Image (cartoon, rainbow, N blue to C red; front, side, top):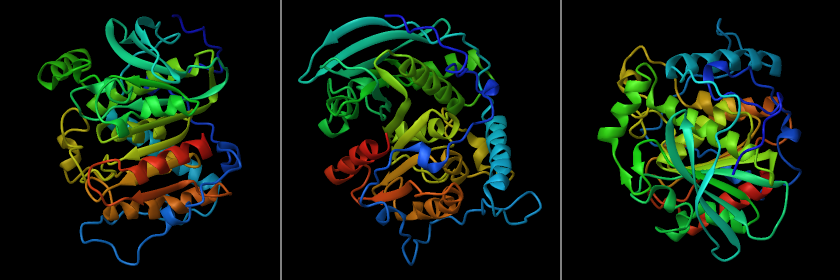
Length: 369
């Protein structure tokens, strides 16, 4: 299977350093006319917050601490935030002229879906695998989603519904709802069943000694979007991203830095840099624990605006302590006009995706994808 050649307009370089300044859409253009009926609920901040909720620096102030009151002012601030994060991540300096070629290894047809295991080069000379799932009925111009797996032994086999928890078969379930789903393997897995940080992290470091692990995950995520966007049955204007835990972290960064992602949901990733293991060397590293590191992830959530972003929490990695992030970005979303399509749903059931959260995830994608 070969992805078609991209036009100049379609091509998004996987080298993050080469990414152009974003062309943002107005809120009305970023999603369709439907709204989820519970949008107000996921934006309603509680009267009191837990003691461990962070105090976040305001977003709508300029470099001289003057208030930013209009969209033009925010777009200038936005570009500065974006560049500061790229400088910290140290992006992979790899450029491609077209998406990788897909080789189909296996194919089966669970009820209502065509499911293919495909191999491709995430980096030149570095093969990896993914599952590609489509509705079984022929069709064109379907919405497409990148579905990231959590830290489970089965890796991509779980979101593809090959094995693992049924509620985590998000790629399979999206395909049954009319989406094309692409489920790529994280670079820390040696194969589709073996997490091997001890071996895979040094291999990455040898190729890219200065880059953060999160820069690698972002590069691979953008590559996955490149592939998805050029499939003949996918509408490149209707792309999404979703993931749980490890996958939720990847969603946050992909949605922030790839303007093609129109709708996203991040489940229990720990949106704050102190909420989970962001300081591990395969994510951001110990640099984020130093006093001189002053950035926080509400800045990345703000980069997503005005596109739809849903945070799902269970009072484990995310939950009541995550409300300040929603509160910080709502004023940014409102500068674009129209509904602010961002929020937090806390199901309060731990590091999981219970039925009520799973249902909201799919409603979010159907409304804004």
